[in-house]
Image: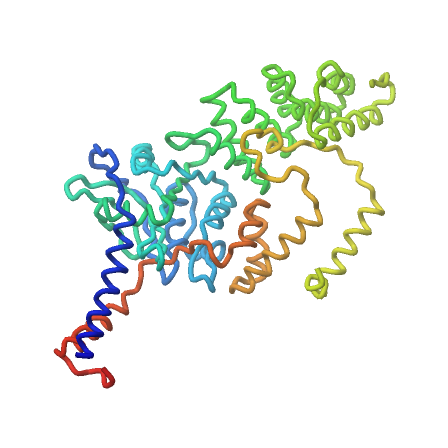
Length: 319
Length: 128
């Protein structure tokens, strides 16, 4: 009797654990209508224990034109005591290697769009349960309509086929996080400008000027009127000492938006460094600086003006 | 704060830092960063308090080291993060999802044996 009792308890618990939790995760089907696709050239790095992060990252970085491997990357992203890799460190590592880490829209269709564009997609899956998660990184390289499966480089599997619904379930439980790494100077498919530009601004904040410059340039080829991208381009040029080009880009920002005070400040400062005092002072004429602005901007402008006057004492003072 | 100042390297470094800012007043222009113009997703703190940045970086480096990352690598890795990412890591390093790999299915065998035991098919475990 006791045995039967234990058995019933155990089985009930199993049913609760698997049944209830899965039921809570049941999803409405996404509209689906896609052909076969497979990016056969994506390299494969079989993972070592707990290191699906380095293995997956190595695959997408090599696909993006870099020459690196999982062992090297492990030092940059693997956390021994966590026995795994965190998403933010994956993103940081992409930046350090001179590429833009772009988190895509959270739909299966977006994954397919990136594949169509030639980009493998690094995904985070939860192969366990919400209460007992088992996180795993893999690289999506295709879709097989015959078996309705997602094709991945995963773990020690060169070519893993996972039924689409199983993939969707595991991906949903990880928040549907997916990352692409375009080759240098190229854009991903379906660019969300805000999100993309945020990723490029982050590149600036860790000193990846060249990559940021290329990325802003790519955006401007497609969206020439984007002021934020042009201001960013000017800033990255300036940071690399390309002052004349920077000044040119700041001027273009002001042509579009004469009230852009950060551009005004930075242009005036750049012109001062180029020894073009009169022009520098003219940029900061009071008529261009009407309206209030954040203290840090006002402070910057006042500092810049003072420095121009100090560097060019022959100029009449301006108030 | 007391905990931080017990660190014998940190205290003198901060002292030197303070003294140098007094001794060599900054005469550099203020170049406004791109993030200040990003009015929609203005997430990063605009005015970077250098002391705070330094303390935050140091704290996150120590956390990574405690989790098994070498000091040299910890330093590089923290420098690769934006201030916001550093903050997130500092708060949640133990809780954020850590992708590891396919779950090792050691337990399945045990569970199968347990079921068989309970059904009376086998008699391996003594107590049940």
